[in-house]
Length: 194
Image (cartoon, rainbow, N blue to C red; front, side, top):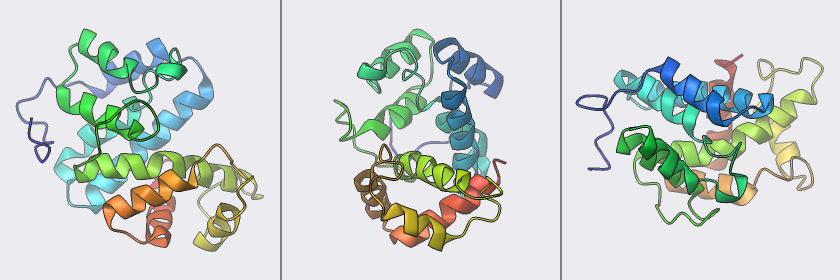
């Protein structure tokens, strides 16, 4: 597989309905399902923003399924993923993209290389942090959330402590973006999910 080739042409196309059903088979926690939906919307937003609009649904499915194994196998996160997806005949490009978001965090040694993989890696933790900041606001929404509010909480390491700042910064670096730019774009992406 060429890392650059992430189009849906000539692929074992997985419909959004099939992806959602598979996700629900392995994940029952409403929080995890909501996170999957947020990542689906975030990935679709970035696909259009970065010029991959023709692959918007593909990017969305990657976002939707990125934590497929987490609900049942949290200790084997991103490891069990490959096995589950292969059993279901899912395209290798979806497997690679979802598995590599665990690079450096789990036993996965597949480094994100395609821009889509880097976006997934960079935004997975960040959406959790942004979501936590939004919940602190009277509106409980990202619709009126600004960069400065996120940056203030970002610096407070015990706030949303499970969201690794190191991973977020590594993701921004992989993309060649400033951290502020990544945060701002991710806020805008999350607004499309509300």
